[in-house]
Image (cartoon, rainbow, N blue to C red; front, side):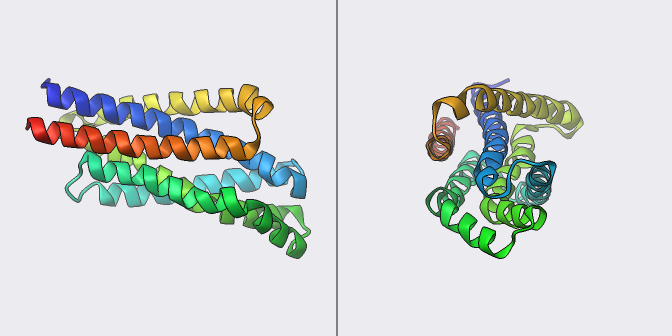
Length: 206
């Protein structure tokens, strides 16, 4: 394996791990965001999980198509910064949006479903695009694609597990929800910068 390929692989795996961490962290925080308005019943969690699953499914589909168009790390990084940008309205206007939804939908089933959709669908869908694009960046030979995809999903799922654990055990006890969301957005921007820097480095070495 060449040094260039090694750098690309480590970068992609690290960023995929980070995206998995952030996806699950945001999903757990979604329950805390909706709880003051709609409670924390099974309806609310069902709404959150449904929205995240649908958003990720669309993200996987779109990311797979985008990965066919001359994939490179600089384009890969755009997913991270786009997710950060689309999370800004949730951070800045989440309370106002929740008030608006709550006044119009007193049923916790439909109110929580709409609120979760408005707050989390777009950034989660963009984060979902990262996984298939990661596989495309990692695959050099098609007969290794299964092993590469398995390794990638192993790493990203470990990130999700760690994000679940740290967010539920520590983050929500130590920080405000908005502080955690801001930190996640900043982390995504940092991932974009890392992808950009590494892309320029490997292109210079090529």
